[in-house]
Length: 613
Image 1: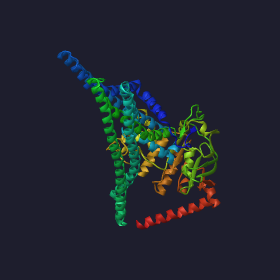
Image 2 (image 1 turned 90 degrees about the horizontal axis):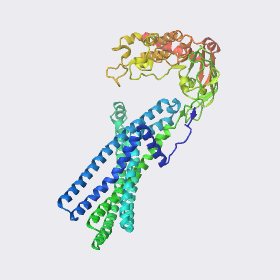
Image 3 (image 1 turned 30 degrees about the vertical axis):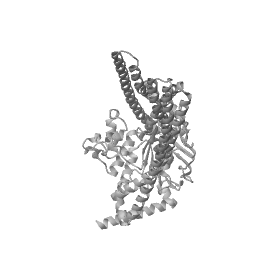
């Protein structure tokens, strides 16, 4: 596996992002999509020219001296041609919009495939979550921002540039000085608008922060659970002050944005007025001197008025591209983040059989921490062994589990599976050898059977499914559900879905682990929702449930793991004590002390319950 998570955030050039976007558009939607986009660009350039030339064409027909029928036919033909071009351009524009929308939707496939296939360590990290959220904005900000808008911005840039070139060639053939005047005036006007837009973008970024803060206060002020504290502790005035402060800052930023556009508009109008005086004066003079015909005059008037629109469109397209650059960079940065599975990984030689797992000087440190969570762990787990990990919260038990099953990678040291380094095997192959019930239990909002089998209904083994539910002690509950194993969990996707209690849900997750039938079963606090007596009974059944497999158990109740061959007492990321329950009790160390403390606590609790009864 190749790790990229240590790289700083990468930035890409504009043209690299352009190539990336249209290359993926071609791959996702085919050459037809590029042809539709290209056709839209061509028609977007030609149609305004045909419209600008209409007045000149009509006047040319009227002064041609031809018969009225011929003139009428010519004008009607031109209008039909123009209308056909409008219909064609409208169809291509709609097709282009649909193509780019579906392109964005298809890029969501890549995004979710990346999330589902990337290593858990990178995704769970604070950096990974930040990068993921930033990448998501590239796809879920609507069609005005992100990759869909980015592709559309380039198409707008292309047809504005094409129109500018076409109009520039026509004007330049008449007068290079006139072309220079139009370029300078349009360029200055567009620059003013570009600067105002750039300032507005920065302003909106700052305003968005205050809007987020404002929305947070608004949300907290109406939530019932927050409302109690707000009223009890008299926080209403403090909240109102913050409301008004942020609204005032937002208002000032909006005023600043509006002032920028107003000034740019005033300067643009002054430049346009000066341009019109010079250009139209020049054209009228050319007509008076006989150097310009009436049809040509009308054509140039249309071109001059459209020239500035092309230039403004060009600068506006550039501005939008710059604004979307960050979203594109964020998306690509996430898509290259994390550990990428390399080709040529070895398969697990003893797949499906009991394994020896060995840890040599294993250390692990979470991102951003200044100290290791696990320190120099040396441990050998024999095939078929029952191993318990116990200790106080924060001792590193769950982290060690994630390292054992390949979800996390050691910061230092190595983990071996049957003598081979764990990273020698593909992650998919490693995962097949482990069944894990994690501490954070939940059911997906799918049918109960799908939650256990983790596959399509047609691929489920009904006999094996029922056997797993029976062994886990949840079959009797399943039989009472409206649709049995086809009953939906929760109500997110099905209003008739059901929710299980904490203890039932833990048994369901145990059934999932049993159904997978992996040679190594790991249970991380699998009975946290049960009382001490029920937990002890459940652990007593585990030994029979996983017979012939390696079992690793985590529990905060020390008395529940007596059946294990070996108990590791963890403290501050280290294995502080190791041995059977009897051996650890005789040693009279930290394990024995904690055991006696827990025993006294549960005895007192039972006495209190009996006295209340």
